[in-house]
Structures are given as structure tokens and as C-alpha cells.
Amino acid sequence: MATVTVTGRHDLTDAQWAVLALLPVGRRPGRPPTWTKRQLIDGIRWRVRVGAPWRDVPARYGSWAAAYAVFRRWQRDGTWQRLLTALQTLADAAGRICWDVSVDSTICRAHQHAAGARKRGACKPNHPAASTTSRPIMGWVALGAG
Image (cartoon, rainbow, N blue to C red; front, side, top):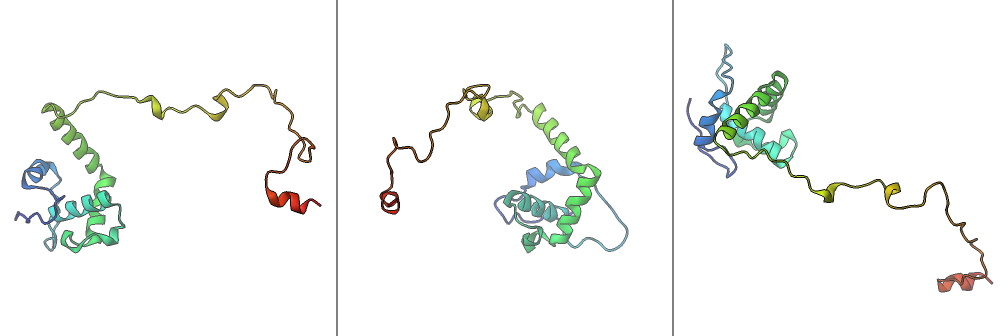
């Protein structure tokens, strides 16, 4: 298979593409594909990284419809999950993955009712709004009252 020049800074390098040799070959009879699998995968990676709609995939990655078709086909048949598992296995064997779990307590939040409020409805009664002990805060309230 002919190699494609890496055009974007986030595209797969030749070394990264060599690791992906475990991808399905997918030889169907008929016309040869217009775009290489590498272009389509780079297009899928671009779309996932940027978060843009599929129709905004740049033309250098091939047709957006072809990239979407490959993405959905591999999603349905479990190719992405197998690829992730295989890459994690390789990275773990090379010692590149640390499986330690770190939990930060700043993300743990209690419910608002667990913040020290009184229980069983033992609240002080509210003062009536027209209380004589409270004075108006806004100046316009005193003007409109008379």
C-alpha cells in the first residue's frame, strides 16, 4: 500500500501507522477504494478531536461520507474496541500505562440538604413583609409607599 505524506501536525506518523497493522484488511470485490484507509482514519481522528460535524471533515482526509461509513462500520462490529484493547496491551507491556487510580476529594459533593441545615422542619418563622421593624432598603420603595 502506498504511503501518504503526513499533512497535518496531528496526523498519524509512519511509526504510529505501522502499529496499526492489526486493522481489518477488508478486501471487497469491485472498484479499488478512492481514499486510503490512513486518510480515512486521520479524518476520523480529526473529527473526534475537533468535535466538528462529519460534513466539515477536510477534503484531504477523503470524503466525509466514506470516513463516517468506516467509523460506523467499525463501531458496529467492535473493531474500535478491539483496537483499543490491543493498543492498551502493547502500551502496558512496554510500561507506558500506569494503572494507579487517584481520587480527588474536591470533586465529591454532598447534597445541599447535607450541608448542615436543621432537620425536621425546625425553621424560624419568617418575618412578615410589611413589618414595622424593617426599613426600606431601596429609595424608590419609600417614594411609592405614600
